[in-house]
Image 1 (cartoon, one colour):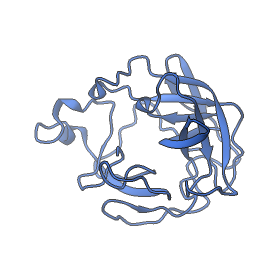
Image 2: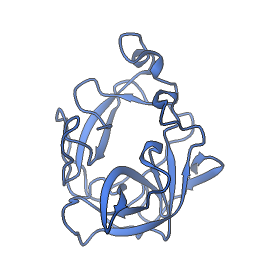
Image 3: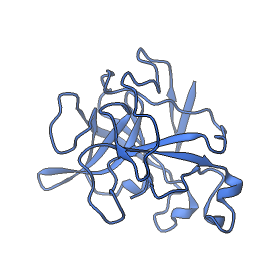
Image 4: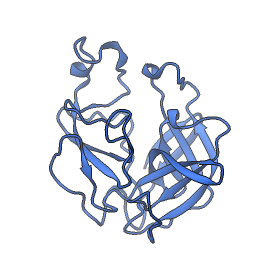
Length: 215
């Protein structure tokens, strides 16, 4: 059993009927610089975090379903006073889809040491408790949480997915995007001609081309 703990709240991932980290719909293989549209529902743990403005809801960040009632997202996505909801089973944000499930958020736990004025300090993490459990299906599944202390090897292929800007300060796509970013070893990533002291041992470096998970 593997767990994620933030501010005294621990979410432990147990084997479920669908298993974790094994999508029924296989993701597209290969590598496309700057990313590509993902195969619908091939990243079934991907969620859309949305905030309410007036009477409408707007996508603001992605996140990962790690247990039927818990989502892992970034601390910088959460602002005090805003109203949020989670939408699971999404591919195209511009339309209502039969696969989507909407959940209110019962509890938000942001890492106590997260500081938006010091992104390089790390701790950019938050847990969101859903008002009711997600119904697991081919389009909604949980991701696996790695064991504490696990170090990913250099050049291991990892994928990022989401609806982030297609380019810096550009529009967000309607359809889910994916990009393959090979892991960069900490000893390389923390070198002075890379990211230097900004990188912490608790972070995972990836990429080397022009695609990014933070737009």
